[in-house]
Image (cartoon, rainbow, N blue to C red):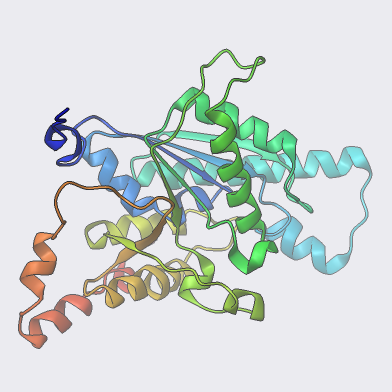
Length: 302
């Protein structure tokens, strides 16, 4: 029997993509891959971002910073009211930041960020979101950051487990099972820098980079919107330049966002991006001018 594979394996999909980003903290939803999402929205794809935790115990100027230093004791009612208030402030900032990048479907699970160990309840809740959205591409954190001792890595592991469960039947979920074609891990901390001995134990390797030089100004303005997280001002500029700028420099461009592909890709032809072809033999002066392209330090954040 002869089977023609050419029409099944050649080329990229031409459908409108549904991309789902599920990250640990509210700001993670855009500051790890916001430029990439801006590109897809400009192309007409659909993007949904979901923050798992409130993000007030580690990234808030009041609870995580000011009150941490005073050791304030509150009743259960008082602490809940304060958390809800600070969560509302942070979520509004995230919605504003995502709006700068064109992201309008922004969701929050509202889980209190204390000691968030991997648990079945959260995994099932994430699986329900996956079945509802039916993503073609799912983006989350690299699951083994710090060998699993990091909140981002633990969130990534729960998303990965949820993606597996989402492909199966859940009698309490009206949506049918959905199996996501590709999962990407965004901007792993232990790829950019080795912040501890646990980071150094990882063999993380980013194998996909998206050039976001054209939207670096929007990324900087989005980070600047996170006032409660104290990312505004010079830190917005520095974090974009030091992180996304470093990735871009490594890849021979101005700014880039890094990803790890969960699954290897099956293709019909070997890929060769036009840029790689053009840049392979260009004069070094032209290459360094492109790599030296800076936007973030000069973005007007007033």
